[in-house]
Image (tube, rainbow over all chains, first blue to last red; front, side, top):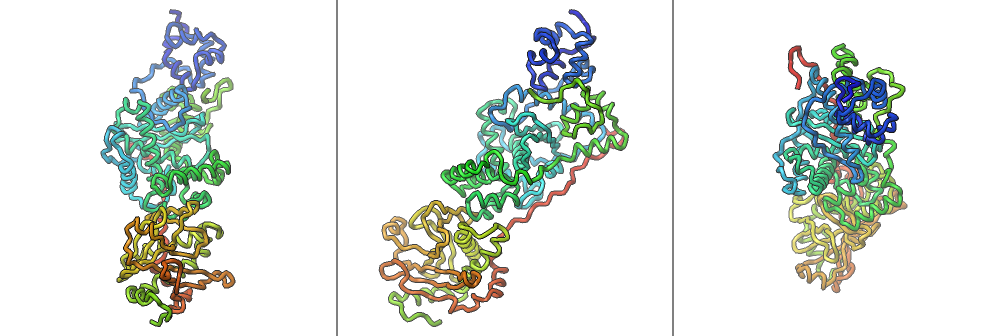
Length: 381
Length: 232
């Protein structure tokens, strides 16, 4: 084996490539190499020359020490995906890689700070999602509100609610409109929940629903084994349950329907600004509560389609998305007080400043590192 | 209480015998107040008066208000019941052996599903609160054939700023069809025309419950670890 870059880790190159959802062929084209070369680098049959290494580092926007440092072994994450079925395995895999990077950064941050104690209620849900009925889901939502001392009114800011209760929320460009959100939790850290929201659609109300959906997974599926999550039919069922939870949590049966004075889209549009939920989700909620029947639900969705509201509803332009604050405040705290420096963060995570900003959902340039001219932004595809 | 002398079935007297004066006044107040507030509060909360508001909303308010009075009026039962001539649910007000049906129609386009008082079928701007009875339908549902039905009719005067104008209980004739006679509630209870009185009444009985918004403060802040404290 010809060793041009000492300690080169082929697995790291694969990791970086997959994090951008690039195939070996695509990366090879970007590097001006053959795909066979990339394959050989990744399998450690060959290591890149210093010149190629420099191009790899620049193109993938990662420091060279990333590629020479073995990854700390950690169990593969089992993420909950909130996505349309068309979201490809390649894109999901990319976000699994990014999630590992995110955890790398978090592990550095928590050496210096404590996040709020996780307070996800343990309602002893069954491990098998098939055993969870619709009534159970409704009850879980009610109990979660009670656990957090909430009444049954609209929730002004569900992102802050999640953060106040120990969740870590990230809003960043997920680079694929088929992917809405995803989440995971850390059983070793009091079930701390990590929620990732996309900015791609820029819909505040959809994003609120996404947070509630992911909270639903955290409440209801904490005992579900990973092997169950990976079964497509059960995954679909868990998604349905999380959707129902989101509706029940955000629009309680004891309050929301009493304000629906007429099941028309005009009525729901009036209620949208108060409840800050999408008209679509309100229709589904009314259907879940059997306040409207299948025909009325279909009629309402037909009316929405006629109005062109299925893709973008009224008020979507004016309602501001709720912004997570916890991670930004954490970085402010550490950097402003000289407890942690950008360079140390880069050195310890082996990630570039741009990538760190991206995985934390922090605005580009926050870590004050000029972007490399040759580098690719961290985008998929 | 003086009643109209035309009372072939003695419905008036049976009605009044079985329903307390206060009970009748209360129901009248609810209906009248719903008239008054439908344009005002509705406009503030839900926008301009439109097809769905002018009729449907009024009935919903009346139903909600009546359900709110359930168990609070001696001698008066207020219940959700199946619609005897179609799907859905409506309100029945009962006093003795007399039942009054409110808000009833079978037009599915105006289906009004709301809150815990269930599904209610009504038609926009309809003034008839009670149905004509259909013997077959009635029999199917095994309703008590001795039950009397009354119709609560109300309207407002657009020329007077939508003020309450007419509030009557109408009784079916011997064929159990439309009203054979009526009881003018505004004449019986003049205070129902007084908006101040209505407002007071509404404060006690009729406020639509609106859940208070849960204001979430930003409290999830990171804390620095103490020196030597181990990270997780």
